[in-house]
Amino acid sequence: QLQLQESGPGLVKPSETLSLTCIVSGGSISGYYWSWIRQPPGKRLEWVGYIYYSRNTDYNPSPSGSTNYNPSLESRVTISVDMSKNQVSLKVRFVTAADTAVYYCAKLGTKHSANYLADDWGQGTLVTVSS
Amino acid sequence: EIVMTQSPATLSVSPGERATLSCRASQSVSSNLAWYQHKPGQAPRLLIYGASTRATGFPARFSGSGSGTEFTLTISSLQSEDFAIYYCQQYDNWPRTFGQGTKVEIK
Image (tube, rainbow over all chains, first blue to last red; front, side, top):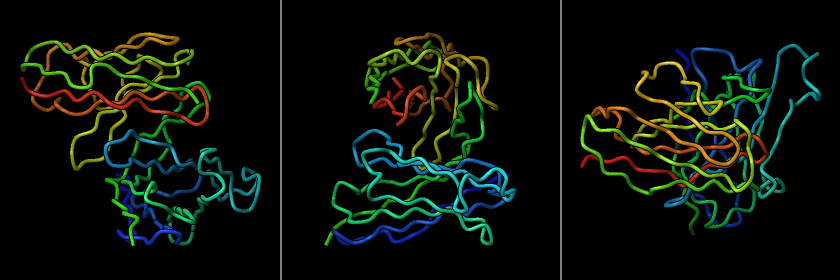
């Protein structure tokens, strides 16, 4: 059974970089889309972005995989994978209080009309941005 | 970006009763609409996709309908394990966007 566990610092200072890792167990990250979704306190869920990576380099448009980011965050966000550790990572640079949120990683595994839906989620980790 | 609006914010229902949740999109999303169930302290679960297809593990008392801009999630006879927050999400356009959620609570 696939399990996803987010990990990282619970407190980050303003203007610094938020770094989170999604540890995936029970299956390989290769050949799937992986996403980060966040929920600020009292607000709705928000897509941060997603990445696709495959061991088969024929399916990767670039060596680091294929990514898509929310335009509102694109200039500050990087999602990457570490195949050796079976992990997906998120970095958000120059954070402010507005980046305080519960961050979820999720696998996009259910397909509908050329889209993939988040069907396996981690439990989420709260990151607070404060000095 | 597409704005998703859910109503009501909170729905108080007695066990065994029917619950009807609404979701409206600011522009057409065709049938590219999903519902998620979220219980406190747990991971969200994909409940419905394609507006009406139940995801694995959910019983037939959950049903979804609608297309374009108006969608409905119906729980025909609420069980104790169904009390949760339900979110709709469109995936017709990027970025995908969620509604603000409907909390289904015990009356």
